[in-house]
Image (cartoon, rainbow, N blue to C red; front, side, top):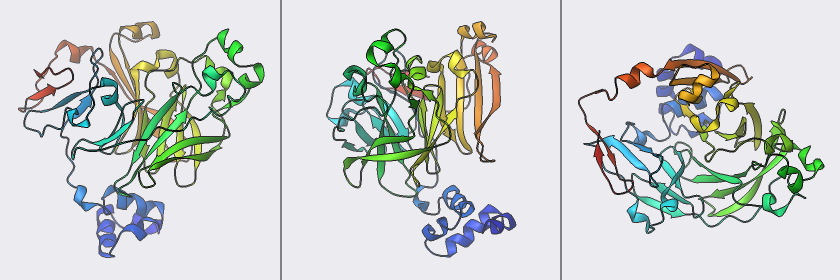
Length: 355
């Protein structure tokens, strides 16, 4: 079946698959056909065309998210219809294919285009895998966990939310008071990692074990020494969830309940996690690093942007540096007018400002 994709252009093969009736069985034949079905959105033609209506963004010092969009676009913010005035409950934690995950404590999944939303039930308490026997303050604390949203409208109208534990930042000597040397020596992430998963179809949380393929990222004692950023990014790409923890990504494949550890680009953890981002584009997973004057300490001149692409084509994960840009000339000529359409920065603390 792979040979057919090499013989036919993707658009021709897509038309053939479209004429077979439902593309869902064709998607299960092989990886090449699945890629064509997904890329051409054969399962959900109603999702086309895709266009950028706006961008949600967080600005330091402002509690609520801002909505950056063309003046002529449809206004899909603020979130005042959620029946809550708590800013933390309207904070955007994560997003996936048009859905937003709001709030760290009382989590809500929202479709801002349709204004449909659902409050998630509170997850059950679960011990962090590998920290059994450690002090209660780090063993089951809800501060040391993150939620991640998975939604693929091409495959299903349902969504899932993963709750994944992490090792807290607990540098020496405190870490030895809260966990003994045996715990420090345990691998992280564990060989079998149990996640809590909420399913919109089942409307409940359940434990789901995932088996690690390959080496661990290090030991729990090693992870104790890593500062944990306020936000750990994630991206969903072709059936896999890529989650940032400490100095690595976890590539979690949903179909076979397995995961793999992928180290971040060399030296990134030294530069600082708060200025990096893990996301996806049409070709796959990317990691970016934005540095400012602190970059002078690492040999960079002023402001700059680095972008790495995760090459998975050979079966061995490899980061390729795609872009290394000096932003000083751009900032010297800021703001620029890119087109004739004015953009506006809306909502947040009920203030407005045109760009």
